[in-house]
Picture (tube, helix red, strand yellow):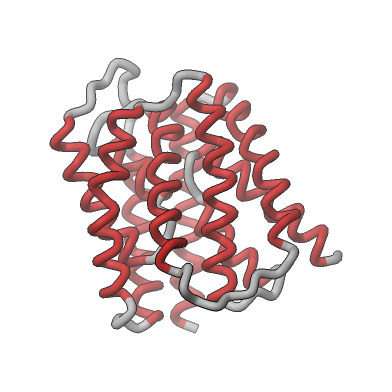
Length: 246
């Protein structure tokens, strides 16, 4: 199987995750770029941010047309989390990679278990501005420290902390993903990282997959999406934990 075909397949998978679950882009993109396409970690991190931004914008537009985005909550999350994410990102540079990976795995396990246990929030749930801002700041600090886009934490935070319905949390989380990824990409702008052309087919199928993922989210119940998302987090957590220890 050629690298081109692998890029098409991996991009489609990332797009489906972002479109249907509102998350999973960065935690799927980085390993795919490294282990399937031969990118270095530095190249994969930068390329992942570009891929996630483009595919997330596509998925966000689709969710917005369907009225499945809580703009106020999402903007508060994004705005409140930018400075904490930047500060935590500076701190993370002084932490060993193995420690960061294990911390990520533990956090993903906790988030996955919460999603599997959590009942679907009511569709008429209300959002508190102060709580949204506080949760967004905490989310930004955690995601900045771990160096990921943040969607895998934004969805359970929106559902569990703010009682946002899962159907709205999926679309709203994309705002947080885009904001965090843009901040991280800007921080890497000064680095001389050369990106392989394989990022182009990856982006193309990620965009198409994001549209298909949105349609999938309209056909699958929010409770099922929660179980799928929680299971995905647990699988990723186990894989990362094993990789960090061996």
